[in-house]
Image (cartoon, rainbow, N blue to C red; front, side):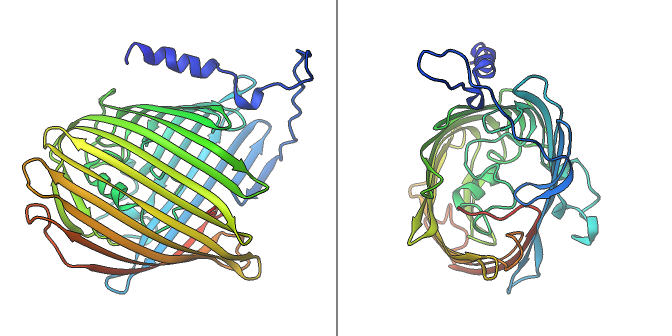
Length: 417
């Protein structure tokens, strides 16, 4: 693996970018000239990206996002208050440029009075993303090689932009993996290469026991290795259909003093757990299919994850299935989306005779407000979680009924399909 990695990265870099493929008539080897559309200059607002400043081939894109949660059972709180930017330097070749990206989460600080008290001032622990990349000059999804913080690729939701989570929280299986610091923020190298419009490869190597926003920053290159393939067999913009399927594997060593914790669907209150230490070996599969129903966009998505921890001899598997559909979408009425979701998680250990099984049902709606251009929305979600299993794993057997109302504003449009 260590010997082959430089050769693999070199091969990915020199492969002809998809955007640079040539066209022409049969027998004509002359590539068709590329005619780039004129780039808007100066300072302007782009709803799907944020605030943009363009000067020749230099571009700065800044965004921001905040969500306030209203909870009938406990004090209201900010779920996320984030600000980020991407700096795209002038290209170093026809198809490559150097870029830098950062995103900070202000909910862990006392900035702007969000969390007055002991939270402390803004510091390195508040970075959610921070990396330098060599990437395709026009479309980073075509090629990107980065080094920095938050390089996890195992789950489709792991690096999701903070403005477009379809529910209050990610899937239970993914949120609970975060309790072992194995899927969360990390330091390392990541490469992404689109081989064709239907096939994208990703790989990462680094340390995912913790990143800059962990309590103890650590870095041991090669401790975590992951790879993923993303397939897009259907992509029909006119028909409103798109199917994306992903498969990933991950191996992380040196996990110490960790517990895999079962938690309720919305508040993530602990209800059980087992030790999770040693080498983690994970496999993941996910899919998302967008299609029209009576002229309205709908999406079905699902994900499954299995992880085994060698030293604690424990393992967990689970996933979710969710459907969501837009009822209406117009400037004067807004954009209303209904969703329903089912989560299941099974947790066990070799030394414990029986396993614990957790189930959760979550329903709700997202409503992009009228005349807000999808930049302001309301989110209502109800979740009920139950758990059954041995006392050695389950510490709280009460069924949890939870309700959350979220108010969301952003400099990027909230798009669900």
